[in-house]
Image 1 (cartoon, rainbow, N blue to C red):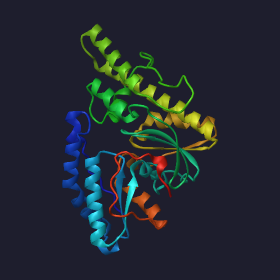
Image 2: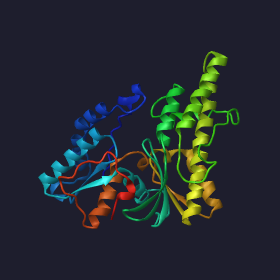
Image 3: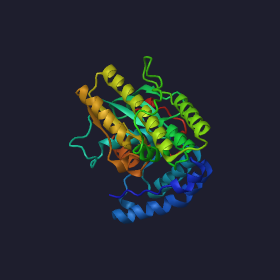
Image 4: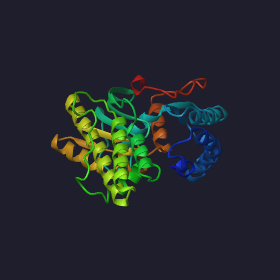
Length: 321
């Protein structure tokens, strides 16, 4: 009915990443006016609201506390239930929303790759709230690695789109970056070594050339993006083979990466599996995915006590339906 987004990218761009205190203060300024605007846009009065969903975690504690305080206050004032939603469950379920561009939505059970600035996880999903962790990053998430690589290359923030844009002009085969943790069994990830390899590659270019040309940046960006994409693809193939499932849902900000989508679709085709992802506008963080997850849980007659606290760390496989 309405889905508004206020981006803090410009606020954090000078720092090359999110500054928690600035993020929290901006939440305080922007959230209530946006709620009012969304209700006006959708033609919804307060007495028509059935429940309020908000992000309980995981995430930055200050920003979570602002959202939770506003959600609980409105729930109390309007006498409706409040539902604290797991941020990554919101991403996972976004592929089930109408308007995803697919002829059909995924049906449980399916395998999911949740890949964002803060998380890189492989899950098997057998139903709402029934998730099993198959593998996760042991250090940096893929999205965080993109941000750091972009910063090394003096590209903009957020790093994912900037790396992808630069990689379009890259020369194939000039650099070959490692595919971390693909030479051993298992479904866990690690991107810190790839980040170090990128840093060393850039340092060597600067040592030889005394500068970093635009072509150098594009070539490194292409090598980095290809390494991340192939690593994710290899692990997703293993996950599909190990679970025996034939649906792969990809969600989170990095799922918007075109090269990743193409690589996963080519892999899945060979396994006679399908890849399903949200519409582009639902890939990065958005309110609609949290509202939708809340709607599904509200239909099960769920509600949370207003005294529950936010959970900056919250394993997704600890959820229940």
